[in-house]
Image (cartoon, rainbow, N blue to C red; front, side):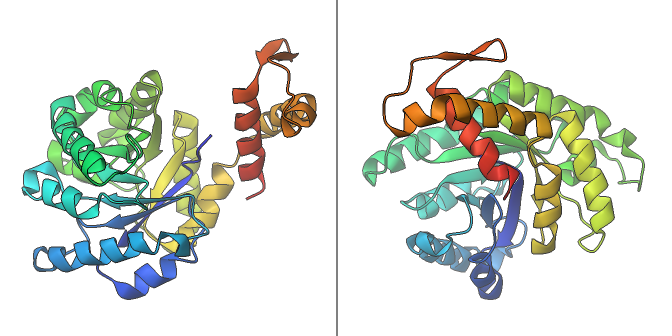
Length: 291
């Protein structure tokens, strides 16, 4: 079971940040071609991403490497895809997705690129970001648009801008409905949800409180913008004691047979049937429980 506890955005244009990213243990490193890159530097940033992906093995502490392309409205999202979809890329973060149609246009291009470059079909996953009122309304259909979609991300600050609202400290009224709706829609579509960033990089206590709220709403993890936020987010989204107990029982019952390649088809644990899929899930839970 993939982990989505932490997705850290790293400016693809900054060589120092790119080099430091090799040592990060975030679940997902997302090299950014959008907000952190000036229009005059987009071409250079794409070339840096190409180099990064050729050196994918250097990012050994992270589970997945994603790239955030520019939004559809920028007019250069397809140029970003043609430049960055290659072997070594685990997925694409698509910003400011308003509806399913916009997403399917990009997916069609990704299909073509995968085939042309002999990349395994559907290997490049997607995480659409919901950042507008229209996107919130369509969150379920966006999350259910294609099998490539692993999670949807909530972009709170652009959402508030779209609504014409200010961000008011300690008052979530302006975005609470959107923040609650997105994980429900994502889960209903078989995807996960990743919460918005916490801007105050030195306020770890505030980050922890915000991450706890996100977990209670059903988010699987949080977007982050600084390495010092990784540990706190991992602690909050670490599996619960009950999940750890369940996973331990599953491995105890299925483990010996699975390791020998002679596992039973299904067994009953706590009154529920478990099989090879649950074995993989249990291994993943215990892996992240002590990460």
